Picture 1 (tube, one colour):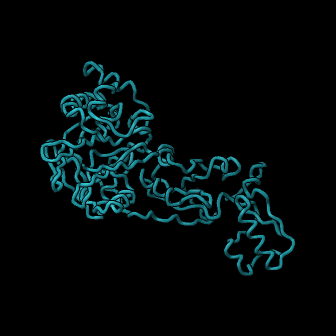
Picture 2 (cartoon, rainbow, N blue to C red):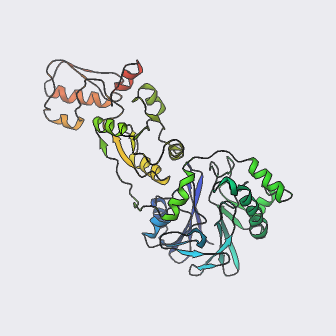
Picture 3 (cartoon, rainbow, N blue to C red):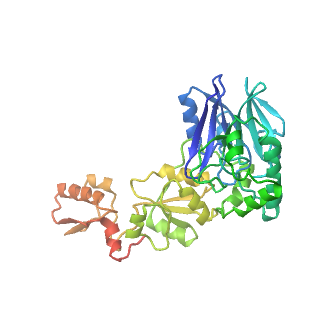
Length: 412
C-alpha cells in the first residue's frame, strides 16, 4: 500500500503531502517554502526526495518546490504556469513516470486558470487524487483571486472541471486537497484534512447545486475577504522565490539607535511578544502581532512587504519560527530585532548580562537599580554585581513591563 504522509500548516490551513514511491524515493505535492519538514519526514523513512509537484500558482504561500529542487528534486507543474526556473511542464492528460507509479495531469481550471489536479496511478489503477484547490473537504476553493472580471468565468470553469473530470473518478478514491480548515481559500472550519470522491458527492453542499447557475450563485455568495498578500504571491511563485535552505537566516540584533533610524526611514515595527507583554508596555507606534501559528497571515494582511521589518521579541521566543513564518508569505526584508527587548527606562545605562561576569566599566558609583524586561535577568545581574562587592543594589520588580504598566514612558 502506498504511504501518503500529510504535512499540515495549521497557521495557513493548508496541507502538503509526501508520497513514498516504494523504491526509496519520494514525491512532495504543493510544498511550502521551508523545506525542513519534508526533508525530515523523508529522512525518517529513508527516502530521497526525487519529485515535487505543484497543482497551481499559489496565492497564499510561497512555494517550496524551488527549495526542494536545490536538493535534486525534479519540479513538475502546469505548463500554463510559465515558471521562470527549471521545471517539467505538463498539460491535460500528460503523465510523469515516477518509476513504477505515475502522475497524470487533469486540467481543472477554476480556482486558478492553470490549475491541474494530479491523479496518482499504479498502471491503470488510480490510487489518490491531489486536488489542490479544485475539490476541498466540504467545499471548493475560491475563484476570485485572479481578478474581479474573471471571478464568474472561473466559477463556471470550476463547475465543468468538477462534473466533467473529478466527479467521474471512482467514489472510493482518496482525495488530498491542499487547502483545508482555516484556509482563506474557502475550506470550512473543522473539516477533516482528506476525503473521498464518494463522500464529497454525498455531503458537499456546493456539489448539491442542481445546475451550473445555482453552483455559481452559491459559490460567489459565500466569498469573504482575504489577505492582501494574495495579490502578489502568484507572481513570486511564477518567478521562483529565493532559496534559503533548511536553516532560516538569523535576525540581526539592532541597537535602539538603529531601530529609531530604520523606523524614521519607513521601516515597520512589529511587536511579536505576547499580548500581555504588549499591554504592559511597548514602543509607541509598534504593531502588535503575537508570534503564534497565525502570525504569517496577519503579518501579510496588515504589513506592506516593500518596507523593512523590525521586530520586538521576548528572550524566550523562537526567532527561527518568526523568520520562517515571515518568509513563507514573502517577507524578505527582515531588518532585524530590537536588541534588549521592548524598550528601556529613559536615562538607563545598557549592559549585557554576560558582560557582568567580569568587572564592568562605565557603571556609576553609589546605589544601583537593576532592571530588565520582566525581572529574572535583572536579579541574576544583581547577584553578579554583589559578588563583585556592590552592596547598595535593588531590582525593579516586574521589570520594564511593570514600569510601563504605570503609564510611564519607555524609549526604544
